Structure formats: C-alpha cells, structure tokens
Image 1: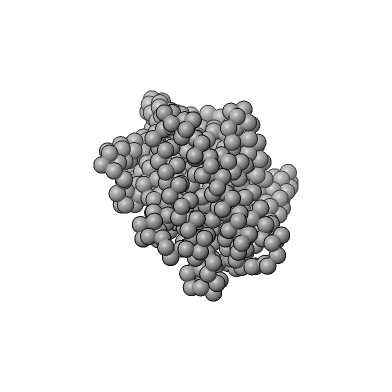
Image 2: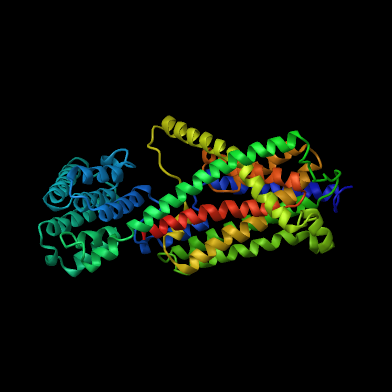
Length: 495
C-alpha cells in the first residue's frame, strides 16, 4: 500500500530536496564562504586560551603536563618528551610565527635550566635572523598581514629574551598583556619560567598530568572494547542472519506516496534556509567588527527550530498515530528490545565504519600528496566552539549532538528518505543512497566523508532489520555521545 500523498507531490518534494541538497553540498564543498557555525567559532577564537583544534598545540600542552608530572632529571628523558611534543610538526620552518614562538617556550619549559634557555635562545635567534633577511629581499612584496605577524613575533622574541635572561620582572604590563593575548596559556608558562614547581601559578598551569593519563587509558580501553565488541557482534550478526534467526521487519511501501519525500524536502529547505540566514546575519554583523558574544548561542540554539520541519506531513492531514507508524517511532516488540538491538547493530557495524575510516585517511593522504601541500587537519568548528570552555555552549553542543541529531536526522534520513527510496529499490541500494545524502549534508571534505557515510549505511541497515527507527536513534546517540565524551576529555586534559 502506498504512503499518504500523491505521486505528483512526491515528484515536487523530490525536486525541492534535490535542489536544496545540491545547494548545501555546494556551500559545504565548493564555496569558500564559511558556514555560520565556523564563523561563530572564529568569532570567539580570540577568547580561547589556545587553539584546541590545532593538534600541535594540544600535543604541546599535554606533553608539558606529562613532563611536569614525571619531572625527570635526565636530559635524555626530557629530550624524549620534547620529541613527542614535536612529532606532529612536519617542518618546523614552515610553521606560522606564532607556533614557532610557542616552540621556543616549549623547549625552555621541558628542557629546563641552562639547556632550556640555550635551546629557546637558539630558536629565537633563528627566527630573528630570518626576519632580518626577509624584509630586505621582499620589502615590497610582503603582504600587510605577513608584516604584522613578523612585527608581533619580534615583540614576542624581545619579551622572551628578557624572561630567559632572568629579567621577567622587567617586562612592562603592556608587554605582558600583548604576549598573553597572542599566546594565552603558553605565555603564562613562560612568565613562570625559573620558579620552583611548587609555585602556585606553576601548579595551576602544569597540573593535570594524572587525570590526563587516566583519560588516555580510558580512551584506549574504550577503543579496544569497541574493536573487540565490534568484531564479536559482527560475527554474531552474520551467524544469526545465516541461520535465519534475524529477519527483516521493515515493510516497504508501494510506489506512489509522498510521505517520506515531504519530510526530506521540508527538512532540506528549513536547513538550507537557516544556514543561509545565519551566514547572512554573520556577514552583516561582522562588518561592524568582531561578531558579538551571543552569536554562537543564537546559531546553536536556533537549530532546534529546524526540527519542526519533520512534522510537515501533520499539517496536511496525516494523523499523528499514522505518522509515528510510518516514520518508525514504534516498538512492536518493546522499547527495551529496540534499544538493545540498536546497541548490538551499532557494534556489529563498527568494522564497516573502521574500514571506511582507513579508506578516507588513504584518500586524504593521496589528495594532499597530489596537490603537493602538507596534510592539514580539517576545520572542526565543534571542537573550536567547545574549546571556549563555556558551560552554556557545551550544553548546547551536547544536546544538539545527542538529542537533536539522533531524533531529527534519523526521522529525516531513515524514517523519511530511506522509506521513500524503499518503495522503488532494494534495501541495499536504498541504504547506500540515503547514507550518501546523510553523509554529504555534513561539512567535511569529500575524501573524509567515508566514516559518516558508513555510519549512515549502518543506521539504515538497523532500520531495515527492526522496522523501527528507535534502534538507529540509539545507535546514533551512542556514536555521537562517545565522540563528544572523547572531545570533552581532551578539552578537560588540556585546560
């Protein structure tokens, strides 16, 4: 039996969905315009202690904390710690001036004493010599921003020379403020150089190595558990399917209805409208200077309005009980059974996601090798926003990732799009098609979308297996909550 609606409405809704989807993909993949979330992240960047989205900065903070915890007197051991901090750096000479200044602070702090001062001074001398030569050769070709960066780095170098010469007290308040504004936590560490480790400021800055180790062990343990659990559940799933103990409960509708297409089209239209509207607001407000502090709250909180789009079929007469049944908000065999099935299905699908991750990493390497550029991590506005350490922002991020995304996205992509596609194709093709749409709605580079597409494919298979979307919602929640827990753990360790 067809779903509610007509074939004409299905074609019209499908056309709207295609146009909106193509526009979103263009904005995500082709357009140079930043998304509203990225603008929100960048608007608060100056308020962060450090750029937590930068793996070099994270590695530096963590290694300094661990080196402080174990405080070896052996220089070889200290240099080993230094090597761990420098491991993410492919070519120190190509790092921006701000990172090279922090590298000098890193050397001084980890090596300590005369060795630390000597190494830091060597790095500062190398930078200063390079700056002395560059303006002579490139005076007219140096861009204004680059010249400002060099001038700022020269100020940083002069301040650090005084600190490592034992004259930190001689720095003016203005010099301290400028150094702290540019380097945050690193500048504070430099200010305390030479003080005993029992000093209150150093304890505040460098403590946390113990919780960091505990967190690393927890993450490693959880990772090993996920690997073993995923392998075990995937083997069990194959055996259960082969023995006929697992059967598909999803009943595909007959062609002709528009219910699923209406949900997909309404969501796409609302999502695109919100994205464009927030971006226009960001551009307009940024013309007056930095975006206001409340902008990230409005952007993140406003996404809840997009969720209303999933109820569009109710506006044209579909009863709520019928809506629940069609979209999959049901549990014929009990909610608890569906929750367990969602967890089991998620674990069984992890090998697929892991394989997609490996392929994406390989593709990312090949893309950057072909382009001749160093491999750079993709922008992560979620991590950048979380790095602000704002409790309200963290709460908004958590609820969006663990409530909004599982409920809304599963209703749209597995409750609506997958159902609509199953009227015209087999479950494997429908799972792949809905997973591709789901994946490309995310703003990652194309070569890194593999894991997102794979997890969408797994969610679709759970939908086909159970008929309900409670299982996919639980699996989606489990996936996002796990990732967020790791992110928050990193943020807490690097605080």
